[in-house]
Structure formats: C-alpha cells, structure tokens
Image 1: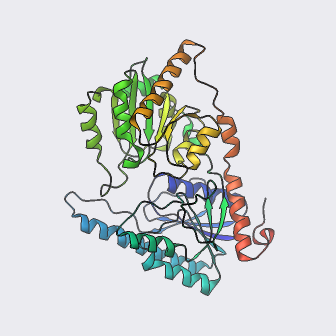
Image 2: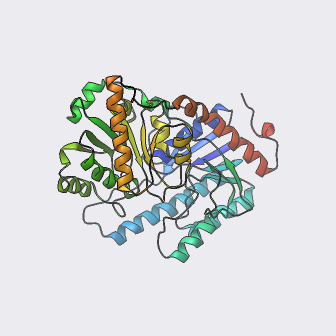
Image 3: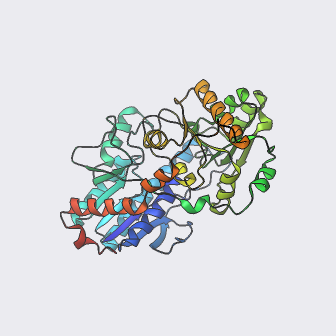
Length: 406
C-alpha cells in the first residue's frame, strides 16, 4: 500500500506521533511518504521516504502585530494544504493519512482535498487526537462550519477511546480505536539522577514534579504552582516552550505567580524544547510527572506514552479522555478532578507522602502501578494494523491485497 502521511509542524507530541506511525506502517510493508516541514530533520529510523516540503512555522518577531501573526498562520495552513494536494496528484497514493485532524480554515481548503478524493479515488483518513473540538477560533458559526467541512474528504478517523457523544463526527465516517504507541527510547537515562538534580538545584530530600513539552494554559501549571504552597517538600520543574505566543500565557506569567506566592525557590522553569537525548535523564531525576490538563482536554497525552518506560507516578487531570481511562485502569498515579486547585494540592500531597515513605521503606510506600500492563496495551504495530485494515475497508479491497505484511 502506498501511503502519504501529512505531518506538519516542527516539534511536539503530534509531530513525534506521525514519525512513529510512519515507521510502524513501513515495518508492515507499506510504501510510506512522510510530508514534513522544510526545516525538519530526517527520519532517524530511515523507514519512510521523507519529503521536507511543507511550509515551516515562521518565528514571531518582537513587536509583530497580532493581525499580521494570524495572517502568517493562515497562510501557512492554506499553503500546506496546496502542497499536500500537489504531492497527492504527483504520487497517486492509495491513502492519505493526516497525522492530526485540523479544522482551522477548512471552508477554504476542504474542497481541494475532496476533489482529489473524487478524481483519483484516494482514501483520506485522519488521527482524531481530540474528538471534541471545543477550542473555538473565531465566531461560533465559523468554528462549527469548519469542523463539519474538515470531515468532507475523510472516509475514516482513528481515536484512542470510544468516541464521546459530544464529538461531531458525521455518521458516514468510519471510526476505529487505536492505541497510542510508546516512545520507549525517550525514557533512557544518560546522566545520573544526582547530576541532573544538582543542575536543577534540588535538595536530596525534595519531591520533584516534572512537566515537559509545550507550555500552554490548558496544562494548569498555574494551579501546580499554587499547590506548592501546601506542599513544602514539593518542587516543580517545567521544561518546554510556549505553544503559541498569540494565545498562551508567557513564561514570565508563571515566574511572577511563583514569586507572588513565595514559592519561586521551588519552581524551576527551563525554556526550550527538551531534546530526546536529555529527556530520559530528566525523567530519572524526577519523582513524579505532571499531566494536569483542564476539563476541556479529551485526548490521550503523548507525554504519558513517553514516560511509560520510566514508570514514575503521575499527577493527572483532564476531562473524559483516554488519558483518564489509562491512569485509572492501570493505576498510574493520582487522577484528580480538573481545574480544582484544592484537589490537585491533595493529590500532590499524597504523592509526596508516598515518595517519602518509599525512600524510607515504609508500608505507606507508593502503591503498585501497572506500567507493564499499560506497555503491553500500547503498541505501534497494533496502531498500524488497524489503519491498514480500515483503509482496505473504506477502499473496498482486501487488506492482504493492499499490503504485503511481514
């Protein structure tokens, strides 16, 4: 089977997801072409043909007006839709897999991909990381129109749990569940725990809560900082960069808040995307991982699948989501109600108590977490096989006739 994977973006969980998905499909014998940003690095696994043709995100210049910044974003989104169409017309694949469903500006671009579906018979499918599209950009009527039109070219979508009732997926679109695969290599430590904690300036008896990845309002890092007031043994280390300077609070907001609450000495903010080779050491140095999403989060977290190899307890929150189901099903730490600082503080206190008891060999140590069960459940191979079977279904052909599996 010939597959084009449309994977715009320079970094982040969704970009990494698309890379691993490409490798998994190639391992099953597919001819995979991965479309990425012009300045993106090559595929380290070498399992897919990488075309660095998509328009990269332009760095925001100081003092740039918001209107100009929004025009740049719109131009990039629409330009990449045209580049995808060009590549589809050139290569005539059996299927196009969108690494992430995106509705923004669909009224201006969905017709283009739909025309290729009708003209070439190619199947368009997408990973629906966030089935409930409640992040509204522009007027409400435009948002709902965009959500509907973005489904026009799609024959199937892939989700990480049963589709929520609030999702607006049309009945004609096939919906299939797939596991979110693991990023096992990212959890390998190359520096000792003591060395990393020394760089952070963390005392040996502190309980370190680590957050990494994009910094955005929906991760409730401000509530984590507030929770430190009631948990004097806890430290918060945040590593990452602001997801969007246009819509997200800057790092300076969190620094100011920590100072106002008199916890700045226990908050370490490290700006910049964490390199894969450094992440494992940071996970080893931490005592717990922070995944405190707001109630509007209904997806799976790529961070969860990155930290699975480290086996550290999670302090998590979200709306109804695959993240919630995974944490509860496999007992991966403390899941607390979203957007509730008191509940978050109590969850942080329980982890602090358990970590300290574990260090002392007490009977109140950390409860058994079924990370091994979670790792067995999450498989890139299963993810890829479901995609192949679904594409074969929507194209009306047999799976074995479309791909020679190993």
